[in-house]
Length: 485
Image (cartoon, rainbow, N blue to C red):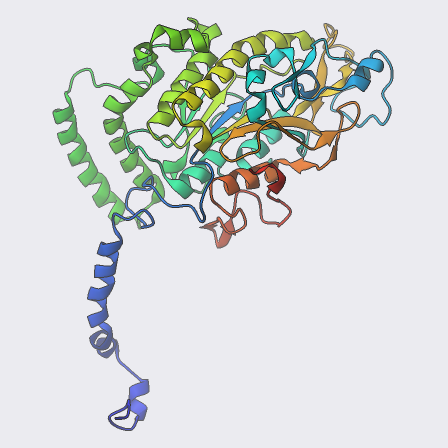
């Protein structure tokens, strides 16, 4: 039997709107059924933007901890030893590059480097506790950025772009994977004493839906009700709040439907719901008083500002246990590692961060979380191997300080599928410039995404007619395959 039961006629090529609806209307039910069947699966497009989603391919890491040393720690005083710098202490260095401020002779590190672990990884005494995990560290000594200024370098490190308004790394990861705990934010940024330079731009979602932006926590506060403001309603119980929220949701949804599903309004609806759910979960997650004394001692918990970073590290472990996807730990407001005047100022900063970082790694191992957690350590750039000179009329107190250095600096990764006890790349003999296997910041981002199961070239978001991605519009960024286990 022929496919056609009669010969085609000219009128079949011209249909009125009513005739078209009559002919295709039976398909609408199938479309609706398919949408209903998709709801509730990990790869659906659910109403909840933070629902768990699958990566593009099998990941090695499920979550990320970004230990952000804002201000720019000196690589030649921490994880990149330079014996030649010792020999040129007080002498002019060859092949000096242009720096942001005048620099003079070479300045050797006042800190001693030692070999640690079976790998013999060389680490300075500043991070002697972290060095106990040397065989887990993958130290990248050849990272480079674009400019020697804090604001654009913070933008590049956090958002992949130094000038334009772009989503942060944590927001991209939240967008790609969602979060395993719907009662907590998927992305939390902790910084004691106030926000750093660029403030909320460091954890912005930009053109991604607002639900993916980071939630800021000031860890100078020690009690839960101050850490998370308005965590509890002082006058209404949960049942009364639920009734109010249901009414508010109905009003907001009516408002939303008349405005073509505006993402800012949709994010506001989701934020109200999350705030309600957080009242119980966040109270528990941020309450480190529930931890035994030996855990507090392991992390070096102290009261006040001195203990803020240690509290952050312990809170981080509690958040990871509860399914938070991305946690960023800052070392303080402003640029605490920005030691222009005296490199010895690195010592108190290291004392506040070294022990807690080592404790976090130990704790994650004890709880079986380390292998699927990617830890990243570093700042927005490094520091010069030459001493910074006083500028006429300012900086008169300079003695042994170092200027900003974006030409070459160090970051390290651990856990989450990277090679432990491994060094990748190198700066020159004095630590000024990346010369062996240079790694741009966007290469770091591409590698992080690969460890989480994403191809950075195809992991995109459609905005203003373009398919944007974390690593920029060109194909220059590359995955550092040699550091992946």
